[in-house]
Length: 299
Length: 244
Image (cartoon, rainbow over all chains, first blue to last red; front, side, top):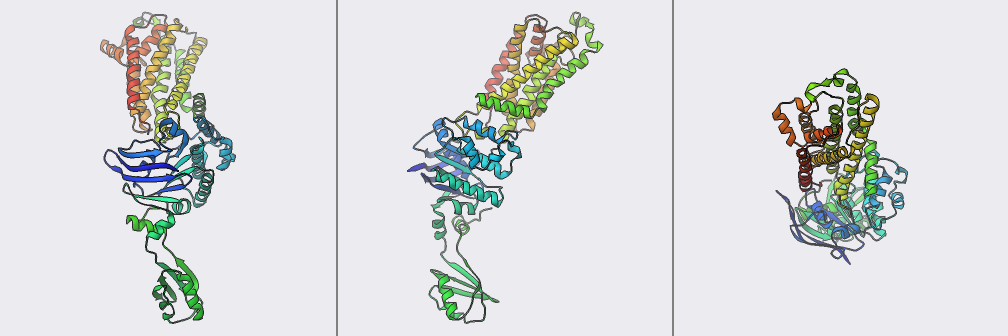
């Protein structure tokens, strides 16, 4: 079932075109990534989906065409840079926001789930960045939404807090909540998302799974190792999978396709060469992004 | 709604600097200066009335209300806008205007507390008379306070940042307080200043407080100016208010 359908969305601010032409659909139960560099139009796009902005043209259908309060009852949103008053305690914020919904989640359970039970009486301003983000996620989920939009969830978090947050997102999906994740963070998109829309300069340049996006770029693989003794390059060069061999000192770099790694190790074994520090590099989502948009994303 | 007011009240009391200032400054001025002889002598220009009778206490009530309305309220609201508190609320099923209502309720409650303290402690410590026409005094207080809060909401609507909001409030507040007779009774001012004051938002409130305190009826012109202020600022603030 299609939970979100966006077609030919366009939004212009006074002096700049934020979203030019964006279309995508989000299926029920998936984690859908909206990936793009800063200023690509990601936030404006999801704000239109959340009903916070009116598109200039194009259509947005969420949950079969809900709008207004009905939509807001079913849609949880965690926006970029929305703080809470610094003196509000964790439990007060949860209790207050629960009162806004007709059928709220049990906030005590939710508080435990996001790991803030021991911070129950801590004021918002005294929480760490990661804890504030987790509270923010909890507030987005407090109305028992069917869809949650999470914008730049882990920006500014340390690696551990980031990983914890990813775990939390996976759990939420397990509960059947469809998640739209806006990010400019490659690793996050690659690890978490089922499908990703790559947005650049207000347009969708590709929609696919992370693996699908990666396979769009050059399929070439690279294997590097240090040789244990000198040997004739031809041992490798003659393999069907190999397209190139180069050597810098003791370091050999082999490029090729197919089952390259197996072919190389087999050939080296029969030539009695032991490869040390054997490493294989494949194209990453970064490479895919670079080839799709012609620019590197800023981390 | 009740929960929102409760939570906002708790937050309000957790940063008590502002409210305490709005209550204690007028109270300290009243009790401190009220016992000096200058304020206790009959003044011929005021028809033999003493400053301590109605002029000074009324001005202190005015000071307390406008401090809340023109500096504290806009400061808090613009901070909420700047920090995205209002934006987050707009993603929920409730309307963010409820937060404005909750804020107004809290500030209003503080203004009432301050006024009651001024009347009661003024009576006990200085022996000043309480407002003679309680019903009219209350009516004037409600109308005048509404007009000042309307002005405060308008400041919150147009202030570009949380830093400038209280500054704009103060910039408006002090000249208006002057012309309302905060430092020198309006009767002793040049005629032209008195006439200008009649049509500005604050002086009619101060005059009406004094009149009802003394047991007189407030001037219809002053009531009209207050009502017009409520209407104009209310409409303008709701048109101009930005939620993000």
